[in-house]
Length: 136
Image 1 (cartoon, rainbow, N blue to C red):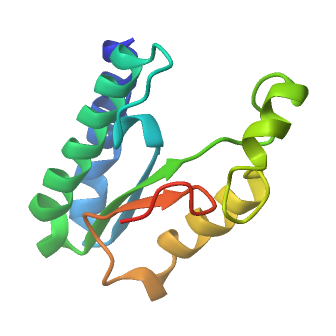
Image 2 (image 1 turned 180 degrees about the vertical axis):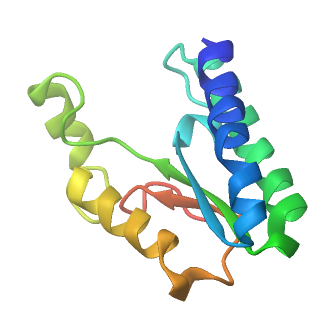
């Protein structure tokens, strides 16, 4: 699990970074999980370790590429509406401060913003997209 979570981010970033540096502009946005930020008692320690490594890699990459006009940020998702058993997730959704699970549209809107020129001063950030389930 660690290899898939961490090495996927490493290889995908490497595949685009050189061309972005040559253009002196680019946006790297990775999707991670809240499991990479907080400990959970649901048996996902290896998954969380891989996600945590990918988050740390983005922070370092952001600093390394910033002078070339490239930003690198991570969105850490909370529980999404398309995940798991509807009965079980309904109970969990009730605990989310905004009162609902996340949707693909929530993620898409955040990615569009981070990819835009307006987000040029946001880099190296890990943004929790989780309805307030965890805050920083």
